[in-house]
Length: 215
Image (cartoon, rainbow, N blue to C red; front, top):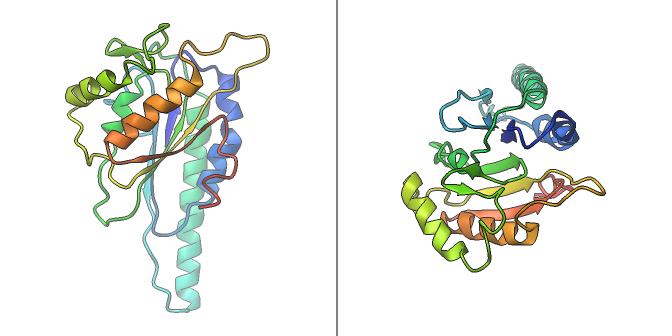
């Protein structure tokens, strides 16, 4: 899970993400590994905000196993919720480095499927591609942008193999200007980007809308 803590997202917007984010955390169960990172000007270098790996408990039907399983899950959920609350309350970094988030996703050693969830406006604003600049991404230049980013970040065709990606965007208030890159163009860009790394963009909206829970 990646949470945008850059200057382009204010605290009120991060709070609007809370229901979806806490819903994911409350669904945590045994066998899951969960990491929470911040998105900001040091997305690549900053320590994770939270990490937990809940073991799979044997289904032997004993009360002792059930108690241990429930305790491990409850502890993991409570710790993750506390970390999430703190993450949603922190912000203000100047730039939004979206692409380095992908550098922090690795194949799971146990072969478990990977789900990547972004809570962000998805407007990268680093010098390699400043999507807060009008005309930075168009339907015509997407084909050239993605190979350039892949070379810079050393991505491979299978870097995100089998992953599903959910992007929960910020909500634009009535009367405010929309994003510099039209969201329909953004979606095409990220569909192509994730697809080039063998991942699937499952949702690109202002809420999860039950999409993840329905899996």
